[in-house]
Amino acid sequence: MAGELRDIYFAITTLIFSQIFYVIIFTWTEVTGGENGLSFRRPPLAIPGLFSVPFSPETLHWFVLAVVTASYLILRRITRSPFGMVLQSIRENETRTRAIGYAVERYKIVAVMLSALFAGLAGVLYALQNRFAAPDFVYFLVSGETVIFNVMGGIGTLVGPIVGAGFFLLLREAFSRFFTEYYLIPVGVIFIAMVIFMPQGLLGFMRRWLNQ
Image (cartoon, rainbow, N blue to C red; front, side, top):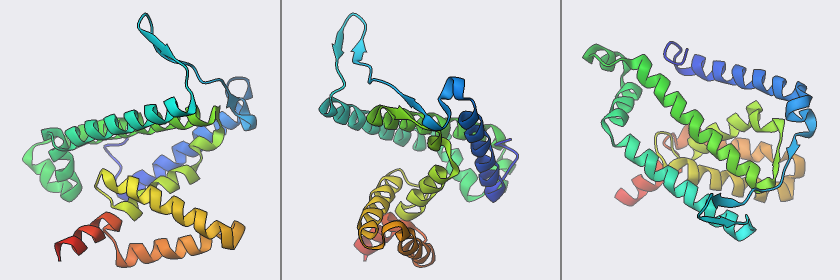
């Protein structure tokens, strides 16, 4: 399915599947805890027979930083590999890439699998930090925030989503103090303005500014 759907249709289908899983998780209370979610203790950071370290806040901080850094380096390696070059070619001109002879559908499927792998890893880190897993983790609003992070930071880059996430969280924190539950209104206005006037995101804007 990932290889057959394109653009907005694939995005909509992805959101539909996330909602299906949300309903399943929300209603399968015997396994998932339903609305209450699952609470757990953090397991120790251990390699059997070598070492075992309890997950203190400081240890968790460095562990998350190490995982994020390793993930970035792996993804950077992938994007600069021949496989990554083909993915960029598909993004720029799928018809031409297909005409050259590449199996576009296979590349799309692998790309979706990689995305799911790292998204799942992010969910594990989030659950470890909060010692709690809730159905909201797979709600479509979470997927929407991820899209916002990418658009604000810069689509098609690895650093862009990190920059966009930091910027979005700063906006949310700042505006929630003045607008309380209506903070999404000014955040939405800023997001729309960025889409119109800064389509390449913050990272693209900074690159253009530095190159002037």
